[in-house]
Length: 205
Image (tube, rainbow, N blue to C red; front, side, top):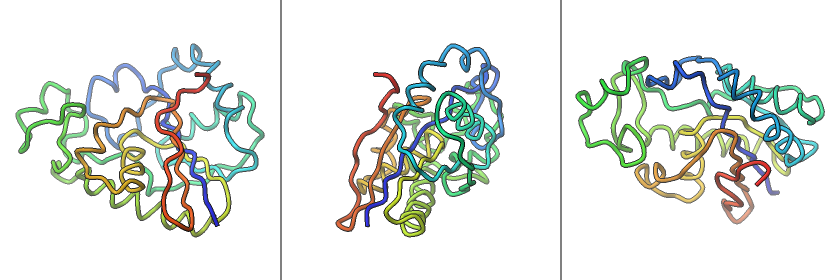
C-alpha cells in the first residue's frame, strides 16, 4: 500500500533566535509573522488531506505551527510526537552567533548552509547522520501508517534529509534544496519505492 507524507516546515522563529545557530534548541516563533501569514495557514488547512495522521517533533515550534494550521480551518486532530524528524543537532555550536562559526569548521561551508554535508559539530550531527535518522523514521512510519496520509510538521534540515532519502542523494546535494518556512513537501512511499510529488510548495501559490 502507498503511504503519503505531507511535510511542512515550521513557521519563522523569533528574530533573536535567527541571529544564532539554534539547531534543536527550543526557540519561540515570531509572533508578528504568525499574524501576518494568516492566509498561508488558511491555504494549508485547505490543502492538506482529510483524514490524516498528524505528527510534530518534540520542539514547540512544530507543535505551535500545527495548532495554528488547525485553528485556521483544519478539523481538530490529535498531534503525535515523532523524534526521528527533529532538526539537525548542532551540538556544542548551538547558541553561537553565526559570525563565530567559520573559525570552528573543519570543512569549507556549503554554498547554501553554514555547514558542509559531512561536517559534524562536537556532540552534534552531520547531514549524513540526519539523512540516516530521518530515513529510518520514514521507513518505520510508512509501515506503521501503510495506506494512509501522514502530515508531519518538521524542520528544514529534516525535510532536506527526507528528500535525500527518497531520492538517494548525498548530503551536499541535499543542502541545495530550498525548504522555506510553511512550505509543503510531499513524499509517497509506494510498493515500487519512493516518489517525490512536490518540494517547497508555498501555500496559496
